[in-house]
Image (cartoon, rainbow, N blue to C red; front, side, top):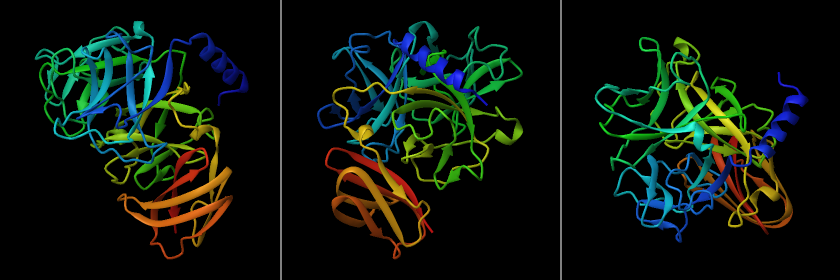
Length: 362
């Protein structure tokens, strides 16, 4: 178990290596153009060589985004974008993304070509990854540039023992498109790196709760992750063909399935954690902590906030609103005894924040 000394060292490292950062981007009507959303960040603007990756982020708006997407540098706007691989699918308004800007020296592009494509996987040839299992914590995103290839598959990583190389593989066992590109970054000591394995104890419906001292009770944290197939041996050779995202419930962070399917056991994720960079355009969600208890609940839930709670909407996992409650204090009790057992999302609006909290009705 890591000590308080390692935590202190981690925080000092974060302050020194300020060039690496994580922040939240939310797709809005102002930055959505068809199937993509334009990212506006000073470290990324006019920087086609930037090193970045991302994951879906359910908070703060509580929006599901069951779309496969990738990175594209829009040279016309001189800005990076996240785009839906299905060109006809308009970007989901209020969908959010956790974006990691990493050291450009630890980033490289991988192109799938006939020499490295083996059916549903493409082998990566890189000195820090070759002959190294598990090897360094590594993260990636599909990348439209430089070959303008749409790539509508969910991907993970694994280690190919026959070639002693890391590979990117299609979770649907679909043949890798020739000339498809991937932006790959290797995490440094600027992030707290860990692995999470889903289990009966951690799984709640479509998500798996992470127990990590840097994440627990830390709404200011962010992280990115990669599914590492087979890292835990044969039991972890589990396919997970769904868009995935991260979620904070008021005390713990989770990785969840956007398609609302049940999270399987023994899936291994590599994760890289940082405290988020607060941009001027972000909401005040993280400065106003909102708590919901008990969780799981049977008859009533209690929701407390540091400011007045103005409205609480409860949605089932299909995204259907099943209850609406108007509030006028910083502590509200809601009767949920009539709701069927299952997983629900409470979207809580206060005077100065919006927060979505997942809970279980027993």
